[in-house]
Picture 1 (cartoon, rainbow, N blue to C red):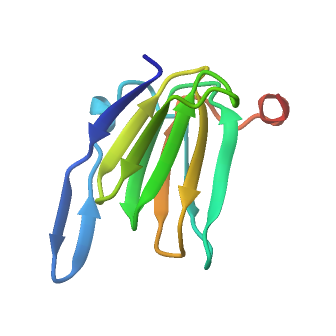
Picture 2 (picture 1 turned 60 degrees about the vertical axis):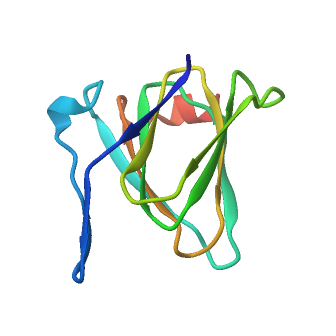
Length: 121
């Protein structure tokens, strides 16, 4: 199994939403964190194989993630639709994700730091 659904606790009230992550509960040692937000009109991002463990957490909006063993075989679709919804990806999983609008935002926790060499693969 290349992907597993997870959920990080989200607390919503009149002040907004707080999503909490205890690093000891993440199934790998986090070395890099980044966010991706959708533009007006939406966009597809990713479109590559994951080369280390990653946890994608929905911050706001909704995101559709397409997964498979390679770019030609997408055999699973995961929809994250409430803050804290997450998917844990293992190395080798190909992903493409749709950010439908400017309200869609994800947080990605990665096991490895960014590498130009790995990004070119």
